[in-house]
Image 1 (tube, rainbow, N blue to C red):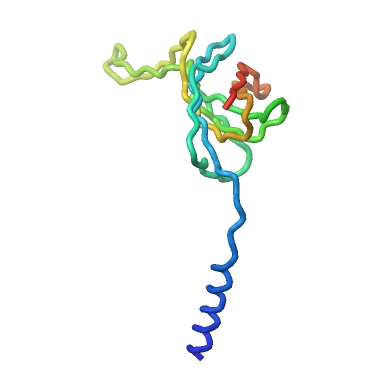
Image 2 (cartoon, rainbow, N blue to C red; image 1 turned 180 degrees about the vertical axis):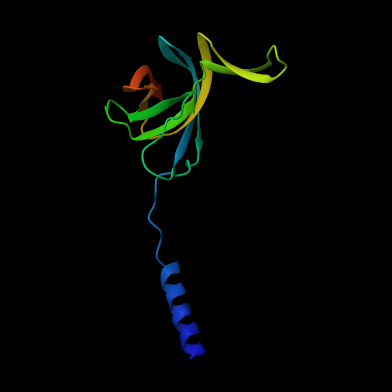
Length: 148
C-alpha cells in the first residue's frame, strides 16, 4: 500500500513540475506623499516598489472618527477599485496636563499637512480621492491625479 502511494505521489509531482506556471504581472505598491489641505491636495513625491498589499478582511471600509477615506480610481474611472481609511493629517492630538493635574487630550487643526499613503498600483495613471465622514455620509475633500 505504501509503495503505491509513493509512486502515485511521485507521478503527481513529476507531472506538476513539468508544467510551467502561468506568467502573472508583478504586483506593485506606490508610496505617494501628498500635501493635503481643506482646499485641495498636491503630490509631493511618489515611489513605486514591487510588492502586494495585504488583503483587507471584512466588508466595506469603516472610517473611524479622526480618519479620512481614501479611494483609488484607475485612469478616468469614477468608481473606486481600492479603498482604505487613513488618519486625518490635518488633526493633531495633543496631550497636556490640565489645571487639576490630570492628563488630558485636545485636538488641534492645522491648515496644511503632508501624509504618505501606501496604495496598490492599478494603472499607470490613477486618482486618489480623500473624503471626510459626516453624519450625512462621506463629504469629498480633495482629489489628486498620480502618474506612476
